[in-house]
Image (cartoon, rainbow, N blue to C red; front, side, top):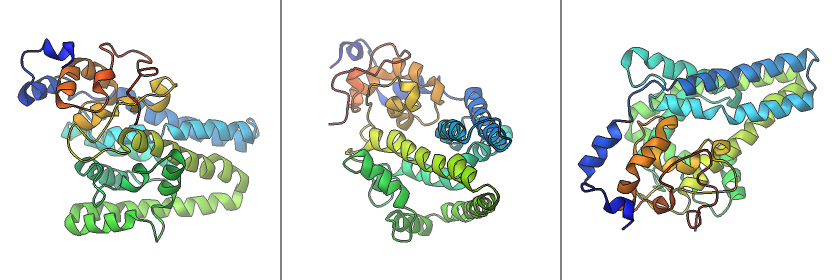
Length: 306
């Protein structure tokens, strides 16, 4: 056992949960700012391009970058981080979740419903909505499947139908979200009539690129090749980029361990809970440094997939 773990006297589940609760319950103001900020950048880019102030090629690059930041705030809202789990502030989770997802043209209700099922059934081929773009051999297959999954022949359809039959609330959320999806579809068509190139390069292409990127860093890298089961279904992973360029998804294991811990509190939680992670045999936990800094996971040998 790791020497850090051996210095902790009580490695029980009860002690672990007690410690984890100390990192839960705050309003994650950072995500609120990111969500509203990235949407403001996206809207401003449209305005500057249409007015001729910013060239279309530059606007497209800015739109791609801002759209890649569109999902994380919604993800925080899906778990109640934006409201701190307080009932009187739940509207913040929904409002920011919907606003930040406009560049991705996605429904917050649909993504929340499917994402919570992903947490409940991680890596289960019968019930995990992310399974078919996660459990593949490479990035190319991941991006191909994530773009094909909602087609009439997409394999996720079978999972969604099964989950809908099992859970009426899940089916209700999808039905509610389908209205928003239709609105986005109509909006794309209308904008394409008046601003064809702008719609293509500021909305359609950026959302496609961002969807592929998000599928790789949120799903494929943390989960590919792993089995189901708490403490076993998510890994720490590394690459040669600072973790913030991947939304810190290198430490996504912490999120699956305790989803109620805010994204920006995960590094401190990992530092405290690392002995328990090692004790539970979480993939890659033994390679995590004792202190999580700006870029702690870049060159940690042994923590990658494989």
